[in-house]
Amino acid sequence: MIYAQLPQELLTLIQNGESLEVEFKKSTTDITKDVYDTVCAFSNRNGGHIFLGVKDNGTILGIQPDCVEAMKKNFVTSVNNENKMYPPLYLTPIEYEYDGKVILYIRVPVSQEVCRCNGRIYDRINESDIDITHHSDEVYRLYARKSGSYYVNKVFTAFRIGDLRADLIERAKKMTRSRVKDHPWLDMTNEGVIRSAGLMLKDPSSGKEGITLAAILLFGTDQLIMSVLPQHKTDAIFRVVNTDRYDDRDVVITNLIESYDRLMAFGKKHLNDTFHLDGIQSVSARDHILREIISNLLMHRDFSSGYVAKLIIERDDLRTENANLSHGHGALNLATFEPFPKNPPISKVFREIGLADELGSGMRNTYKYTKMYSGGEPQFIEGDIFRITVPLSEVATVTVGPATQVATSDTTQVTTTVTTQDKTERMMELIDFCVVPRSKAEMMKHLGLANANHFRKAYLKPLLDSGKLVMTIPDKPNSRNQKYVRVSKP
Image (cartoon, helix red, strand yellow):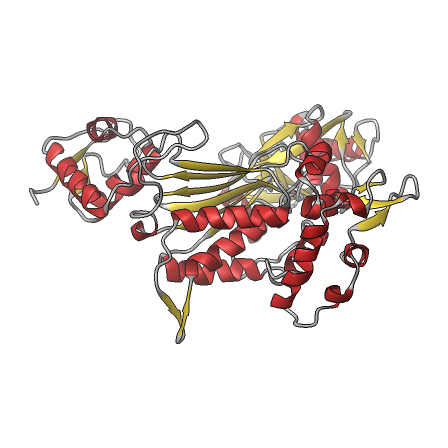
């Protein structure tokens, strides 16, 4: 039998290896059971490509020619059987030939419904098909992705507008002047503001009206927030000297507007506000960066998750992490990024009161001001945990922060900041220490450091980049036998 040749775009997928959306199955004579697990996982996540007759490492083995038709028939029958796959999927394998070998290719589209295989729910995480049937948080997030509904629109009919903080609503009304001098909220009652923002809805099950979770998160008392969302918390950590724990910390458990204030104050406390010009205008690149990443951290998190949102300042970077209802995985590209609304009611209020701009602008602004502030580029990593990493130059943290040497408590631990001169002296000491080849562990012990990531970024990489140290096994930089030696005495 004559088969069509494998198209170049499919060959490229094979050559690039397995990924979130590509899976290889050996299956040279029959459809293996785990093929259906992958179909289910792809259907529940972003869709994907399955190649039968290909080893895990991408080597094309081929399918025995006399088994091709039987395998196609068995596959189609199984995915259309609701006792096997629910809801049934209408997929047809396509046979292709490459270098005299036959493979089967299956394109699995993303499903509008949650798919089950043999009664189990699978999700695609990195390159694996994970059974999440008994993981309630993961199952909820999957259903939320499929339904397009928003957790923050959950209605609480037991609470009314009077249960919210009138002073916060009044403050929000005044803050609208930062955008529009005569904003319509200024002349509204508190109830008018809440209704205008879409924060009061009808419960679809009872037909009764109530305030939403978004309203409570924005304007609720701390006690009210804890009663409906006990996992709500944001952890701010400053970790520059004591890299094993932290130098300063603020656990923020309050409404989103005052959380923004607390996190901004924490960032300003620990990051230098260096001088920058935008055209002929002096700007605070630090404040612009903090505004964008903190508003993103508060607006776009998955509030149903128990994962603690974090703002982390370290010597080399500023990071945020939050649970996320992802619509993809991997690094986002500024040129191709398409913004997706996560919590529209919260985002709307943040925009109206001047804490955020239009959807998608935060990423552009973060790029712009990071280049000013440190000369680097930020990273935005989409996944079930959304991460933003902003690189920092040494001047950002080197001379700021707490200055005492006393540990006051488990929640506020402060130490003296290392100066630029101190670091230079330690690097010179390290160069002298490496007069004979030394391992990374020996070098860290010599400096009294315990954080390998900090040591690599702050000391080892700069010395390697400057040529003052070289690897003893340069062809295998990650070898466990790798050591480092100085080139010449500086």
